[in-house]
Amino acid sequence: MSELHSAASSPVPLFFLQEPGPEGTLLLEEDELQHLRVLRLKEGDACLGMDGMGRRWPLVIRSIGRRQVELEASADPTQDPAPGRPGAALPWIEMCIAWPRKTRAEPMIGSLVQLGAACITPLAARHRGPEPLPKQTPKRWIKLAQSALKQSERTWMPQFSPTMGLEEWCQARKGAAMAVFDPLASTSLDTWLRSLRPAPIGTGSPERPICLILGPEGGLAAEEQELLLEAGASRLWLAPHILRIETAACAAMALAACVLGNSST
Image (cartoon, rainbow, N blue to C red; front, side, top):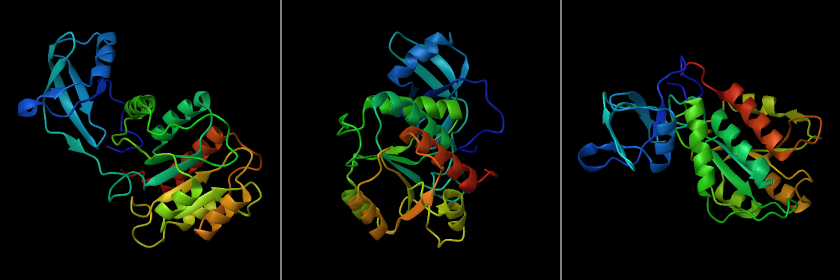
């Protein structure tokens, strides 16, 4: 099944699973119990389980308790390739973003996950807003990503990298294909993405990711821009106007999914 879409939307409910229990028992994640009750599922009903690591199981509900639902696999799981691996729907695309306010960031996370972002990194840019950035990935972000995966029928959870400054980030991404957005740039994102198709083997893998860098609405500081250009980043045009961070991030990811997506998977 494609990570971008399935051949046909399945009416069978989809749930996240815990790690396999004793003797291979499959259990729902605790937060999924309420979803199951809202759907009024009962023992003997069919559903699908996923682990966020590319696997999906056809399941039957064996028993429903107050705090636990026990499931039985009706067939072996399917396994989708990870982003950037042979046969995957998309290469490994990292979104490096000067993080917006919480109320704007949460819808952005859901959209980026649906569109196929493999990695999302909050960027501690100099000119971003005053709202503090989390030192660890909030559980809320994980739940937003899980909900987006179920909605889009993708099977791989994105990686959330810790918050980084640009100097640290550039050091950690040596060899990556990097794009930073500037409304005054002469090359479009579309043109740059298409130029990656004949690139050497390995571009778009987790080891050599495609990185789309979104600065704050006030722009990156001059020294931050210099760091990126020295690291090999390309200055690209996305739109003729200054976009909100979350608008630019989703537009860039959507275009990357369109140009680089493997529609045959």
